[in-house]
Figure (cartoon, rainbow, N blue to C red):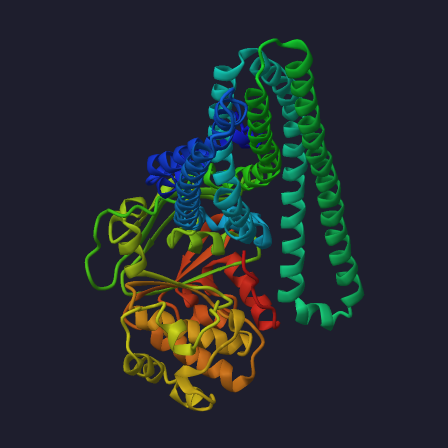
Length: 588
């Protein structure tokens, strides 16, 4: 069965299995709910006894007995109220803990998927998985879940007492309720589809809003404000339309509960007065109270059904993420790597993006330890894909990659990240200080070590020009810094991590000459003494490399030094002509 085909009950049941904290102490919560449900039955039972035995008795009204029974009923109701309250508190606490587990589980699972899958999803939709979708589940479990639990218990207990009083009237109530349940089932299926559609529209809106904010400079640069506003209006209008239709359907469902309530009470009263024999006044009054106590949780369940559909829709969307098989084996345990520079080997590596054509075809390569390796090739040649395979952001479809003669798949995530670092072409910075961003390379580094890292890469002059030094906040995605400055910080982060293997997607953003010199000097210093693999977008980088790999149509067609390739490789000669003509080589 696909995730989309999972019903409401099955989806919520699976959420309980996924998050053990949701089930922690559940039996105590159920016990408190039972106490609360039983305690509410004292009212109709007390009324029946008081009317039949102490008010309408042949000996007259027994005021003392009425007072005693009234005080007893109040005491029992007080205990029941406290038990209900405690059950709600426990359920709310369990929901908060359990859904925290579910959020973290979803986040961890996303990190076990390749960048190919994550990039294939809209960012706003993924954010919705761990924010609004989980929030809807939490609201249901904290309030609707309690109502569902208490409501089912109260219905069962009230029906049992009804049978004890007059089974004929209990049967009437049960038959009417059964017919109503059939109608509710139809409404439930209708609402399930409607709320699934609403969650899709919410994700669409969040994705559009996120793109509009992140892409604000581009929107302004091209004068696309009106088009972007219209796009947002269309997405929000579609969300409103879906929500309006769904809430209108839910409102119709709520109104049926009122009709059901009036019908049950009227029929019970008529049958009790005119059809059945032997009904005492106390029994009839008690039964009418029982009918009210029966109808109230039924109405609550109808309202809870609406919340349950929203929650189940959120669960299904989360399950669609969790059900994607992890394609990166980021295991906790694995083989270790020796210290020092490490060689990198590729053996018969194949890779394709989804069902597309092969991007890498039977790639074999030996990258010596401690050497600077440059990878060159035209757009689409496979050089960037090869680099992502080396750092295990992608997984090969066939073949094997080895670091230090250890297969990449046999390394634990911790060992891999300690020995292999990746600096992408656009260095991503978090909304924090420079020091905090650098510490992603070494969480234990103090401010002195961070400052020393900038000095080691000859960037202390640039750092001194910032208003707060390493305490300067960089803004979301590093927006307060230029593209070149963000790349400088990313290089410092890699330096402080001290990796044995460095994979570097060379920065090609247009920067001022002084910053360009600083970038090249920092890269030169960073790659000394360690195995470095640089995706060279400018052949000037290849000129200083110890070994150059030439990619063409997914294969390594030539390798050697710059001078050797310039003399013997036709592909490299063509790339060199493009370089000398001022053309840089785009990533692939």
